[in-house]
Image (cartoon, rainbow, N blue to C red; front, side):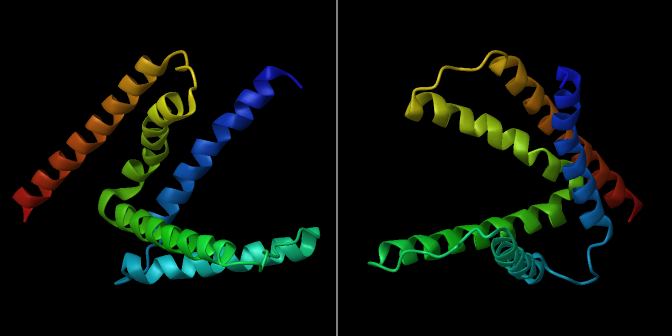
Amino acid sequence: MPVFFWILIALCGPVLLAIGNIYRTLRWPDKASPSALAPGMLIAAALLLGLFSMMSGFSIDIPREGLLPLGLIAVQSCVFAGQFLLLFLLQKTGGPVLLSLLGAVGAIVGVPVAIFLQGESPPEGLFSGATLIAIGVALVTWGGVKIARVKEEVS
């Protein structure tokens, strides 16, 4: 396959995420809080995981010897619940554009972990990429402040 095809496929990921963020913002149920929507997403994800495991022949059976596997699942469940709640809070307060920047910011935060804790070498373009991400976050934040001021003046 030509390289261009794979570049195009890779570029579809952020576009699809942005479309999902905009859709969630436009179709947010009236008077629904993030804490009411997050559990529904987790339940839907669990059902899809169960359905996928049944269809593919892939087992999601866990070892039952000792408490470690169940303890890890409990901790992971709490982490995912908190993550989904924070995701929906950010979606509600920051909007779809700020939420779309979450992955880029996460990548920049993850790079020092990879470099210092896992001994990875810094990737080429790290400084320019981090600079562009910081500029993007600053512009989105600045635009949000300007919009809030205009709304305040109109009110």
